[in-house]
Length: 310
Ligand SMILES: Cc1cc2nc3c(=O)[nH]c(=O)nc-3n(C[C@H](O)[C@H](O)[C@H](O)COP(=O)(O)O)c2cc1C
Image 1: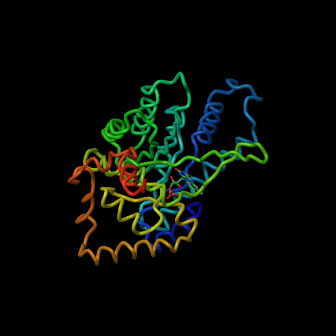
Image 2 (image 1 turned 45 degrees about the horizontal axis):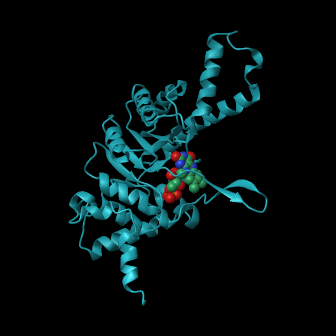
Image 3 (image 1 turned 60 degrees about the vertical axis):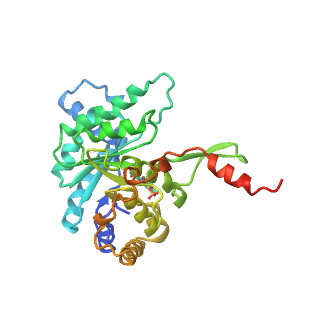
């Protein structure tokens, strides 16, 4: 949906406030960096070290990505946010500078580290995030958003710490490809490429808990499938709301429907501006802040038990 300037213009036409481009991957960038090193220091790499054709493909991808930014910037007025999928702070970070030079309005870093290595400490994962942000911060002046996962031992502490790294926004949260098992073919497969409306609650809880407790904007992501989900995230305190699956499932024009649902609700509730209701139901403003922290089903089961005829 974001690989051509024409499509981005269409998203703008239907009311998108900004567009985050599809990500370019750290691995693709690293390849180019190695290529540069090779040119600068001939002989340092053995000829057979790298597959030349693979190189060419990846270089073309990189150039295409920069052209996409340049051409999208010419075609639309809304902010064009580039995106890098990364999990180390190594050589690739110089590419952030090229993204800035190409005219991107901001850069989103999609950092997803699945904490699956038993020997890896929580500190190590946290420092990787901080290292990536610092390395990119040193390269560019444009605003940086960090799209993070919720796999942290102290999630609230980590969100607060990340928000103090001079970034402009945090996106709560990224959503990974989910594994499944095909019991007929006895194979590991993937499932649910698209989210469902039920996936909304994880980000809703954490937007509500962290709203007004961080030093940057909070963008809600995952499970936003209709206007009411947008309203919920704004009531929880989100500064921005991102969506993808809903547009794949319903077409880009569905943005207009969602925006209409938001406007109709605002008219019905007598709100003229989003800021009049943003964060009204954040944990900070709640009469009972425990509502966002309840994680056990105790109440559900005790209520249900009352109705059981013994
Ligand atoms: C087809 C498709 C392509 C995606 N490509 C990217 C990508 O390039 N970079 C990224 O950070 N997230 C990517 N995502 C993940 C989305 O940005 C988003 O985090 C996820 O889909 C949850 O949001 P949703 O519930 O609105 O779909 C992709 C999702 C889909 C469905």
